[in-house]
Image (cartoon, rainbow, N blue to C red; front, side):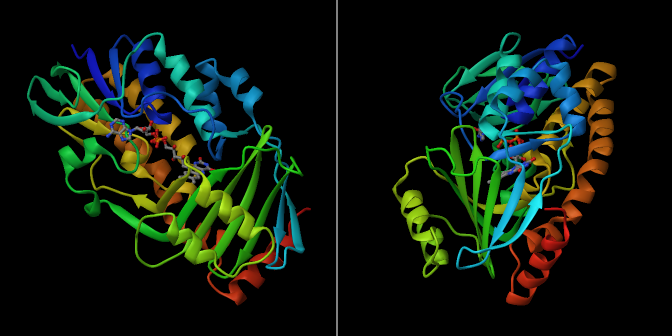
Length: 354
Ligand SMILES: Cc1cc2nc3c(=O)[nH]c(=O)nc-3n(C[C@H](O)[C@H](O)[C@H](O)COP(=O)(O)OP(=O)(O)OC[C@H]3O[C@@H](n4cnc5c(N)ncnc54)[C@H](O)[C@@H]3O)c2cc1C
């Protein structure tokens, strides 16, 4: 019977999966490239289905402690004047900093899983009975199954399914984020300043606030200077926020990507979370990662790995597809391309309850 499972990545999907694998009688080992857990990050929503999974893991009280208090979206024009205020629906869901969500899930999983920090998978060789894994640092080992929960730029996906370019589509947007390390003046307001093709968002987090630069650019590239170039000439607080972004060591920067490989499993290896089906900041990636990991662990407890992988893929693809189809519309709402698109978006925002 399948027992030893290697999970690559101790993020949102990986920790959720390890927790439920252990609950279902498996022996999970998690390998995480980072040296440890981080404790900040951009806020993400934990929505209905994911809240049920988080509740069953006992992490909801901790999530409530770290939840943001954002209640309204305030939309500004290029001069920083308010053009619309939208009430954010008060729901059963919680908004929490991404890394706090990852930490809470990790702590829930870590009692019953072996965790290898500061390491990764260097090679995988599978046969009918198992998978031989070579790590970058730890000694080689054989596992019954290997699950790639290692995010958009998954190493497991590259080793088993092929190069990233085959499965990862640039959505035409880039995102750079930085934490300001100081509380927001308006802890209940998410402030959005748009000009055509550019957005600056200031998002309150408890006792802190995060800034996101989200902008349109045709070709994927790298480096902080892309952000500075894209926002040159904008007024309001943008020069100050850009200076903070440029000076900070711990920034996030990436192309907004859609990950959509034709298969999520091959033999004894499967993918979960962003590694399988990223919608980046344009969908409910965190909630989907939690629900997908729970679906996979439950399926593995109920059948052979082949049956389980097939069931998980069919069930979870049906949840992800509508989000992936909505990426273009979500991008146009968040970062309208033209002046006219921006005017229409702002008009629509004014019609929502403020
Ligand atoms: C700027 C931004 C804003 C977002 N906003 C939202 C939002 O508002 N709502 C929402 O639901 N989602 C949002 N998302 C998406 C959400 O963060 C992801 O969908 C979610 O984190 C996916 O979880 P995951 O576990 O698959 O991947 P991750 O959370 O990325 O975790 C992957 C883990 O694998 C590790 N890893 C990576 N490579 C390796 C390797 N080679 N070996 C070992 N370990 C490795 C990483 O260190 C990490 O710990 C946003 C994303 C971004 C970038």
